[in-house]
Image (cartoon, rainbow, N blue to C red):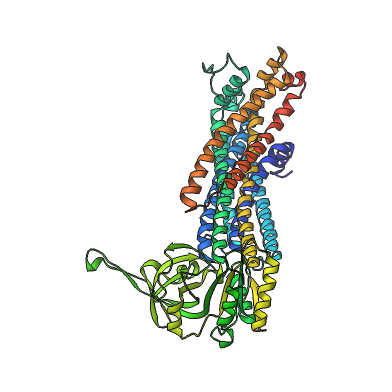
Length: 622
């Protein structure tokens, strides 16, 4: 028989305990790998590179979430592994004492249990890698099926190796510490129940004992197992912090970013332009959520100019209708170096490196524009001012410090007065005053017109009327309903943040398994105590209440800590200018309560199982 046969048989003999440890570790590894693969698939990895996927502004919002969730998942995984291995060894201390009592040296005992640890950790990491890869593959295919921007699924071997080695090292490190401490235990201490279960000597604590016995017994048991209690509270606190950041942060960030996109595109907005220009503008909008290629396009073609008579007719369709004229083109833009003055000439800093790139240029009239962008800085000024507002992607890839620099467009320098988050052309856009752009390019008129429809009117009838009016002027002109693209953009953001919210549930399941193990330890440690209570007249429901209240004490303390830290981190660090509604608050409260209840209910299995055991079996167990 091989040297690993005994450890393998021992693990198989303890199927439930072994399964809980392996599953807990696998969920931690799988959630971490899936988080990294998902971030890479949508272009929001930890490197903050755009790679023609998510715009840089949204990537800067999502990436801190990815980083924080990764850190919390790894931290929770460390505590979970340490806790599970510690509990496993506390239940094996008696076996170690018996092995050492018959003359087995400490080194052999350590090697025996280290083999078990290696099998458990390797199996958990391997299954976790498989789980994370399968989840990443399914997510990528689902994104592609919905038509969202994601390339062919490719396993990042670097991420796989890093996650596998990291958790393998963590598992072996923290596990070996517990095994080494347990293997050095003397046979006398190993046979002592107080030492095995890590309980303290009884104190004079008598809080609430005269008013409620079950709570007093539960509180005494929690305090007596100080080491295990501290570990499980720390574990559950990290997990509830993770859940709070995922749920509360995800809901708030989703609502906030969706409001930015909705204001930038607008609601009940239709675009009127020549059919080729309509198709081009549709492709520009799709750049935010779909992989689309942009061929060369001549925006200056006179055929694309919108007749003034058509603009006047569109404005007359509805007395409350708002019409915005825009001219869209594409040009090479160049970064102009800026200067930050110091107290002396030597302290003056030069900002920028004269970089250049292609950008979508849009001429707008600030007084009549229908877009309401989220802007860092300010909106454009008077119609003749040489100012520009740049998109988030252009700002991040071309400008070092945009608000102190200039941008050279069509041979003229424009002051950068704001940075906006805009899904159009995936944030690679430059807004300039219409009159200033007309003077710089010599354009004859706008090449697109945006029309705001009355929300109270019948949309289908209004679209039909607009289309009839447009066709009466020019057959080659068309109407584009921007609400369709708004819905797709909001759907992409919703799916992204929903995935971020789901990922912490993996750790919540792992934490629930840890709590099950803690309750199992409590049942084993207080088995004779509960048996004596039942023998003198206590009912099974009283014993169940004592165990239940121990779980409740652990959960409520962890819940309070996790909620507080998670809320502070979400509102003060992750999301600036959050958009919060009463509905979001109710959703957060409901989901958080559901997470608490699910975790609590999952911990009742050991208590129910113990409460149903016959009294003879409870008192007669070795």
